[in-house]
Each structure stands twice: as structure tokens, then as C-alpha cells.
Image (cartoon, rainbow over all chains, first blue to last red; front, side):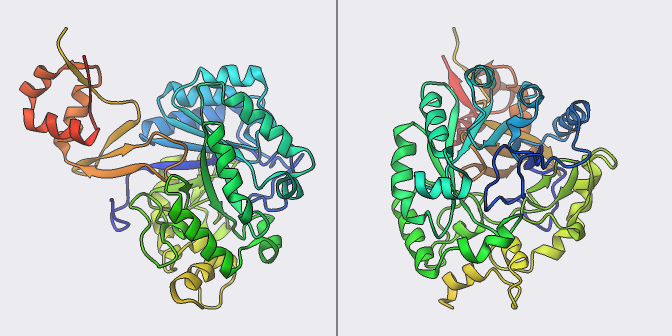
Length: 321
Length: 80
């Protein structure tokens, strides 16, 4: 594993939020996206293509496309084709409501491309957060994806309200030949306002880690899940925090941050159009020292204003606080 | 037709410092991916097989032990 002390010439993966526009308005949205929420100056098609060319030159292995809802961009399929034609592994996080058959025809023709469809609970819990009728739309999309040769993952942001649904969501994903990926709810975007409402209780955290121990095929996405309830490394993958060392976030206007959950002005390292992505990446190493003094997820530690500057939920796991 | 070896599509690599990086992922996200530093020689092999090559050719250019090792780790794949 590369060391933080030895900055890489380029990130291994990046997350690229291509728009803050979204047809939904979820209560926990990490980026505060919604209908008409596009940022002024979001990258145009040619700017986006130039950025993709630089990603290719830098040998970035994987691009995780997020938003907002990526497919509200009229040029999204064109940009995905540009990425995959360059053999950049492309993973698209979508709310699943924009996947008509014509879109899926083009997506299926791309390789390497993977889809992640959001589902934040069964019908009642999902629709309470994501909007009335969304659960049924996502179920319909999963039904149609199951008939396609498209690598698909169901993604659930685990909250106080939906943690008990996980066994059923797991079965649902499995029945659609899709993997299940869990993401941690963080105090970012609208999640800052709903942090105390949605974050897991300590008992739920322990339940979750016990359940994960029994389901090793469930994929998890961050340092929180890197450790199990006993503080042991669950498995040896890339779950430790790689913000600013292995990965970074590019926002819709091309500003670069350590990760999706640390989009604060004092952690911006440059802009892919004005400075170029290589310059912004080289600068990010200087920011790393500001974010790596915390145990667990630095974004949670900083976003939740923990008085000890730590990830309070991870500390609860490790010490029983 | 002789057995050939090639780089699987889910394996990506680049030169990094005085060696290289290999990244291996088959699913969404990076959670179950593998990332490791490799020697410059491994990068040389991967560049050599950018187009599938007969296994004997790769072994002659590098060594049978290197090819065996990379096949075992899944960095290379064989095809008949």
C-alpha cells in the first residue's frame, strides 16, 4: 500500500460530481442537490472532455461519477463514452429514476462501466427521505437492469431509520444480481441539518457491524467500516481514508477537494480548468496535513464539530464512549 | 495456437516513482479493489503484453518465474 508520506503523481480514483442538479431533493443529500440546483459555471461539455483527457494523461485508474443526478446532464452519456473509450473505469452513482431503455442501451455498450443505484430503505423509509414514489421507480430500474449486462450495485446510506431494513435490502439486491454497498451518513450538505436526526445510535452501530461481520460480501466505503465493532481491521482493502492521498473530489465547476465530504473553502486545492488537474492534485498534498490528525473519518470529525477533533462514532466503537 | 498471456481488463497499472502501481477492481467503487506497489520489471511486463503475447515469448523476454508469479496473482491472465 502506498504511504501517505509518499504522494502519488496522480490519484488512483477520483469522485467527480458533474452537477448539483437533481430531479429529487433528498433530506440527507451530501451535496445539497435538488431541482434547479445547478451551480453557475458547471463545466461545459468541451471543458469536461478536456478534463477527461487530462485524467487519461495522468493515468487515473477510476472515476466515480456523482452529483446531483448525473443523468440530468444532457451530455452525460457523451462524457461516459469519452471516459470508457479511454479505458478509465467509470462508476456512476444514480438515483435510478432516469434510466430509460434508450439510456440503458448506450450504457450497456460501454466498458468498463458500473452503475450504483441508490435505495435508502424499503418503500416507507426510502420514500420518506427520497420522495414519494421513488422506491417503486428504483425497483423498476433494478428489474430492468437485471436483464442487462451492466455491473450494478445497490447503494444504501445507512441511517437511524433504515438500518433495520438492511437484511431485506440485501435480499432484494441479491435477487437482482446486484451487489450491496453501504455508505455512511455524514454531516455534509443537507446532512449537516439532519445529522442528529439520521445518524446511528450506538446500539445501531453495534448491530450494523455485527450484521456486516455475517455478510462479508457487502461492500462498504470508508474508514468507518474499515474497522469492525472490536476495532479490528475487517479486511485489507482500500477502506482507510485516502482523501487527498489516493483520491480526491472534483466538484461541478471543477474545484478540487480532498473528498466529497470535505468541500470546504479552506480545503480547496485548485480548479481543473483554471489551474489544471495536475497542479490541483500536486497542491492537495499540502492540505493533507490539515485533515489527517483524526481517527476514523476526518470529514465526520470536522463536520460534526466534535470537541476532541475526532470521529465521535468511531470513538464510540473503539472505546465505548 | 500457442497459449497467450494478457492483462485482464480489470487490472490497471502505471509507472510511479521508481516502480509502478497496480490497481485491480471488478466492481463499483474501490472498496474491494486491490492496490499495490510493484517493481519496474512488473510494469515492463504489463507494457509488453498490452497486446496478448505467446506465453513462451513473454517468458523468454523476462523469465518463467516472473510470468508464473504474475499469473498466480491475477495480474496476468492466460488464454488458449
